[in-house]
Length: 442
Image 1: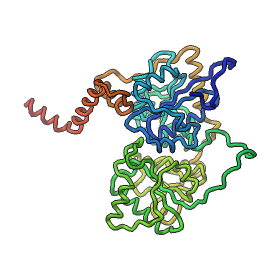
Image 2 (image 1 turned 90 degrees about the vertical axis):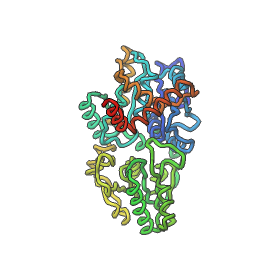
Image 3 (image 1 turned 60 degrees about the vertical axis):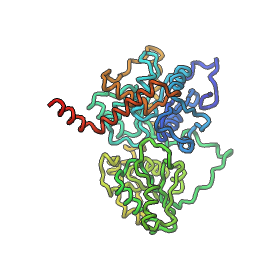
Image 4 (image 1 turned 45 degrees about the vertical axis):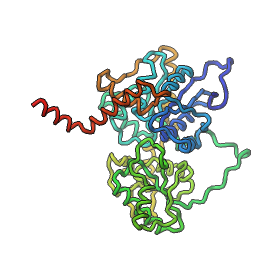
């Protein structure tokens, strides 16, 4: 496969262009990895592959995640465990972007990356709002050479948590790649800009985990129903990321589609201008008069497009809601604002610290080049591995099975799968087992 430009390096080049392999595993990480790769120099060789794991995106999700990036569905391969290992050997990347869930990043490094000086530079990050920083997210990425963050606040918070936990990550700044074009705009003389779309929608950016309880999700739908009734001239869109049977980066136990069906079955009138849709968020933002969510990164996409937003506070402002980052933003408000059609624009001082800094201040690409130069001249230092304890070995089996399905389901895989079933059952019933063991000891 050729690089991003379709060009192969020639013998006349002054030096070989770096080769970068971006490995992804789920819908949001495909979107982030593909967009981040768009910030790399145009003449670098870049491959994007998807690890076949338990969160493998569907063809529809893949097409949506790649929308607006430099990759098409035809550019991307889905690789099982053995094929992924072979690809790492064949392509021999100079740098590896691990655009994956944390547990898969840890398993990838432990299983596939040799801890030697000429190994690839390892880069990782999170695909959206990362505040508040969770220590286990850093622990999963203990082995990476550079952690990418998307705002000055994220850099400071990552560094503070890393110092407190002892992981000491090298955190570098970039712009959230969805908020900046991945390539220069086309020449106006050759490509006329399409006419702007009519803004006729209120978009609710649904999240898999937030809010969590069924009662809160049902109540939120009731407020969206009230909004649709109050604004019959607008379409109120519940924008979902996964349709029935599709996986997401985070599991969604209670879908809005099912809840709407339950509301209708219970006799609630759902107006026809309340609809559920999927598709690329950028397409929805382009038609929105306002965007509402609890804490979705989609609000940042809307801000970048000049769309007023509303970050709901009806369930509070707390770490588990992923919304403390919006304090002092000017975007917080209650669902009464939603029903009234009151959306807000962000405070300028908040923008500078949170995702909308000057791209000229970004540091991740210069640092990546420094690490590549170090690799070529002296070699990279050994990365930090998980301590080799029986518990960690068991964890790695769990991470591996979630992140990488083998090409062939051999005896080892089936044995490990059986072990995991027993371990998960034991974890669910651990207190009963403790009491049983104590009773036997007595």
